[in-house]
Image (cartoon, rainbow, N blue to C red; front, side):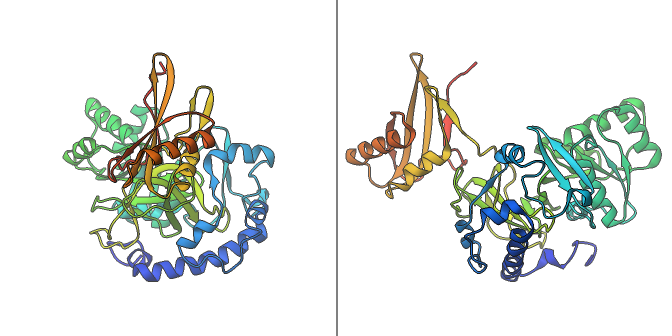
Length: 413
């Protein structure tokens, strides 16, 4: 660890140097993934070893969607051929709703949570009270690995048993908390009711849910600095908050893209889209993995001095598929309509119910507001979706920058 502020030198690299190093590593990573993971060997069989040298080149590669893992794993159990090591050599196997299964292999801080804990102020000798679940999911073990890498003891609190957890925090003298923000509030409130002193806890890392400003402020009044992190059961740490509290800083092992929902088309900084991650994890080499989460890239670097890309945080779900008149309509179909009409900069399908019938209208940002374009777009919409819909043309900037491609306004009870 470099000093009291940064986990390592990787966090303060020159951004251009980071980009070069990431894509040099990616070339080797792609070769290894194709050699050892059958799924990626098939998926990337037509990709040349020199085809991907820059972030923009990633658009050449197909996407693997988190939402497809259940079916992929059913076809080729247990891990769809996406891991590079034998099951016998895995450390743990986890189950997520679906069900889908994720792996953990051996190695120091395999999930990468140490970086997030360190940014939250956790240091060697701290005692981390871990209230993430230890049941089938990896969240608790992510914290365990990160705490071990830093040099901290862990109280394995898990979920529930509030009184016991509060007693442990008070009697042992926990100095840090890891878990959902809402459960931290429950623990602090209960400690007050029981007359137990848990003021030794001065830092916290939250995940699994939002950390509203009002709750963060309440923790601060109680002497706890609470930061958030963004992680998943398949990727481990994705991004983390620093004490600057200005966005989530992307982990050093990942290449993150923000793409138009339903496609692999990259969006410029500031535009809300789907988070697509490529991890350089040798054991579980997920490449162009669409998380289903919405976010946006923030401009510039964090005031804390860390130089990696920043995300605005979790901004909703990208899978906006809906059913209209008994037929599914997907974001990718709306993207196809836009692709066929270069005059359209951005589009959103709005679905409503009028007189008991489903009605859809495609709202399009364009500089051409002629009737001929609207008629042509309506014909394309029908051809692509199999459903008739109206088209409304508007000036650029008329649609909100919230990542919505399909907005369902129906009241479905």
